[in-house]
Length: 76
Image (tube, rainbow, N blue to C red):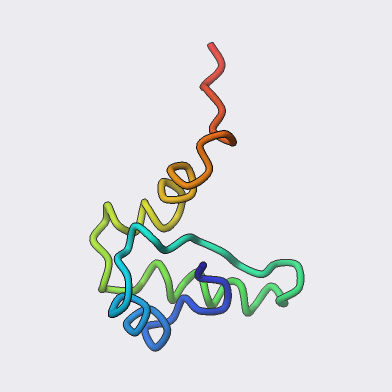
């Protein structure tokens, strides 16, 4: 996951050994202080190595695929 590893220096080597669909968003909050979490999120969302679809995957869709039992159907 991207907890404390959402920077270019961490993501580029990760993408050399796997694809974006194997990366999940993470923050390490509350263990990490809020400014660290905010900086990490900014680094992740500003990373130019993901397409928009890949970033959506990292942010949410990859986790839904990995953990389908936690997917809730929308309320009607």
